[in-house]
Length: 395
Image (cartoon, rainbow, N blue to C red; front, side, top):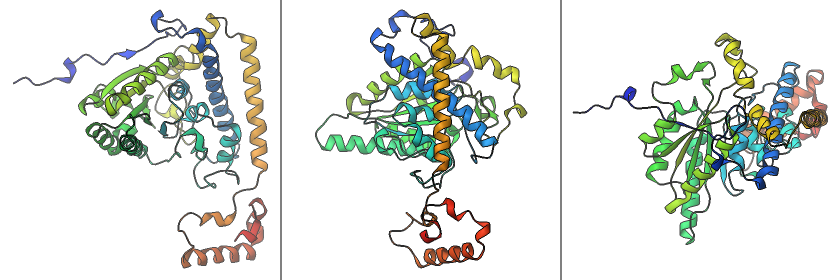
């Protein structure tokens, strides 16, 4: 009778390529010279996410946005992993994956239209800010606020792609990827998804951004086991813990996970990306109520994915202070310009409130539209009707 005592099992190691000084720890894993242009793109995309977050957080405080969530400290996870995937792969996200959208082809107008909810927002202003969607060639599904629901969605997509390939007599060629946080890993959706993926050999990669907090709850209060990677083992899923502040480790781990996920007809892989949520959970949160500034400070410099990659670029004569200054200034100018432009656009038509529910408007919907039009016409000074495309006539 030999009980397995968790505390007697060594913790799962963390895979790392580059240290906090921007030096490669094992030269056999050093990026190839042909990748230098690609790495510069990664760095600029991480800068974009970081600067966009700072400007939009300020905009929310100014009342120009209703809400915002930043990705500070996790830019390396999203950009690095997205860079390792193929264009035909399918992705489901949570709400801190701005870097995935950027790396997969989202452009400034796409971000801004959604954030300010103008008529060009594919979601028609119905979703909270940072819940991007709409650009079909990215392969990224719409973000939803409901925690963890995107995890089984990715499993279903992976299984569907596998069945389609096998029925066509082709090898399994695509993977689905689910991004989520450590808090979402406590949801039932996570456990159900892993079990189905394992028993059906679905070609899916589970990417957990373990940033240390589920809103205000630290991981020390979330679980007693060895993080999230250990849970994959319980479901029979190969798992790897990765230093999420090291973009080279993130990229290499995701590439290898993708290769493994497609082997022998497909199977799931779990990656636990270790990082730290430097920012507040959202603009509705004050994280200093549950942690100290001294705890946060080292992650802004020593263990920061942007700072770490910048050191590597400088060590290899691919970057300098002048490029840093000019690139940041250009990104900032571009974001501010596009935000002002997006704010000048009209809002979606008022009728869009009822669209996409039924194929044909129901009697109840028609009655609601008529009542809304009556109220707006009776109290025109109470509504900014001219800000909506089509004005009152859209009703």
